[in-house]
Amino acid sequence: MAVPKRKVSKSRKAMRSSGKHKPLPSLSTDTQTGSRHLRHRVDPETGFYRGRQVLTKET
Image (tube, rainbow, N blue to C red; front, side, top):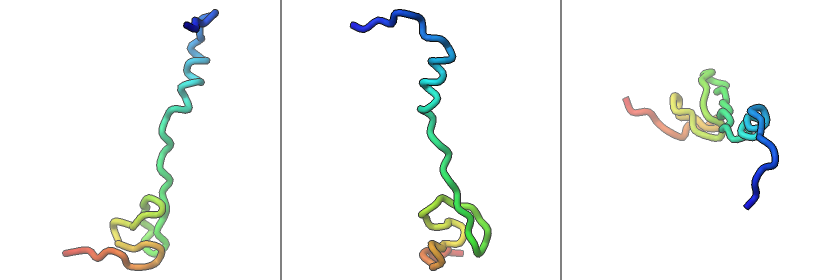
């Protein structure tokens, strides 16, 4: 079984675990309304995707 020869410092341990965090999702801005939404997905406020009406809102 492998055993470390020296103690791993707090700095080295933190640097190793720093890459495990999830990145924040990138948001896209709608050109017509200016609302922010996830990229490559339908804008939930307007129902538009790539300039086309995909969803209709029920009122």
